[in-house]
Image (cartoon, rainbow, N blue to C red; front, side, top):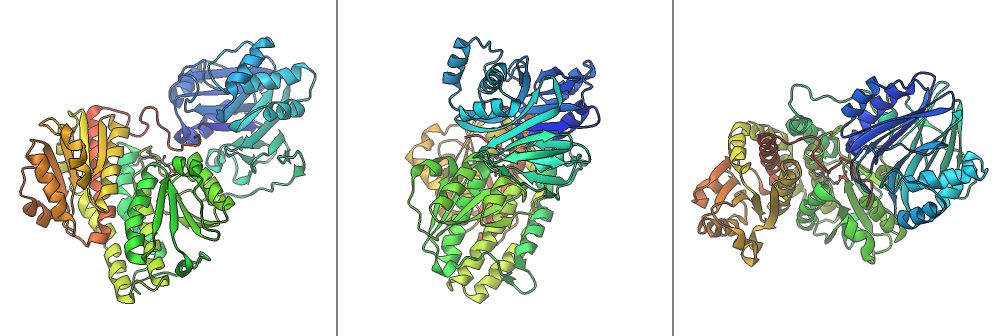
Length: 606
Ligand code: M6R
């Protein structure tokens, strides 16, 4: 899962490629590279690590060609070294690839027997050698690429340059996204419209199986069966401005602080706040007819789905099946024809979630997508979109997208309750009024930052941390643990508080911090019993609750005192202290908060 870009331009391509790659760094930042063509001669520049290393290296390398390709990598096959960085090249071509070639071992063995010499440990290099073999035997570039692609199993989006031909670039996709940009006497190709935003807003998306032959003045596209097809460009609405951190030290902190505003926008989009009702949702779905709803997502988006299960079951009396997308896609779960599936994804590009969407559609279901990027593949393939209005989320650790997902899901659950005639109008009005308070309460919680930072300094000395919660606080415990481990690299686990006694309690000693998410709700007393079990074993408790909860708990604990609020809205508000706790722990540890090791913002491989 990498970012690729290609330019057939009228100016030096290298600086433009780097600018586009900056917009694709969310897809990976293990290494980066560009290749250009100048008077038919292929030249490459690659560097290990973040893009700034490539930029430094380019200062000393004169790449003046107007035709070029670029790549930012998230390592799958082969360590994140310079030799494994893209573009990969032979004497005849250079190539960038996003995806995974599953049968690369057998292809590599075969190619080596034919005399190919490999310079990397990547799966990608087999594509370069396969195309090279075709060119060596006299095939034209398009035929050589087509023949190579027929040999591949797996997912790919590629861009290929050919030595000796400054006027040609070939792109192709199967599984991974690829967009074509139309300029004025220039043509571009990229993993998404955001990458191409500084160059053009005229974007066409290739369909799965398409192959595109680009020259400086246009493009010919061929579908999976090799037939010429039209993929006309439309105007993309993404901004060409790179989002900046403003006055914040990290994107993550900026995004945490944006939550009152973006959650407010999202709620206002779905709720008639003055009328105390949900706005009519033009989804074409009759909730009254549904027997169940199936929810699929990954990571943080999955935890948003877990919270939503409680809401759908309570507000709408609608049974929910919820799955991690990477499990769902291979479970062969029978799905009711004309039923409804819901996928949740910030990026809209997550490979497992996309595969789940396709599985559900193939089973005859309608698919609704809660997405933040409306130009994404999931948004384009879903039958209906429920946008989250979080704005671009740059920090790899998801924060504002999560709470906006929760906002959308809460509104959908309320709407479903009304449609199923199980949620009285007065209850709808009470819930709408409660959710309308979320932005204000979030702002109050953000003012607790100094106290949370002090607790984080202590947490930063721990090797392991447990997070506990019950009911809708259980997914928040899972989310807190995920946030902490992904940006601070401290091992953390989230548990349903009631599960503590079934195993994890064995871990409790004076060195084990236990973060307890415990609003003073109907399961509070049960959670407090679990807190007492931790206290009795000298565990270090960090209690996140309201005044009533803190005084009722009666244990020695570090406290984060959150305002009191109706139980239904606590997941949105309690998400903020766990985000801040993870953030300040990571800052204290000195890790790369916005681009933590081994991760990428968008996970486009299995
Ligand atoms: O773009 P998506 O919402 O589909 O991404 C799903 C997960 O990869 C994502 O939430 C991941 O877990 C985040 N790094 C969590 O902070």
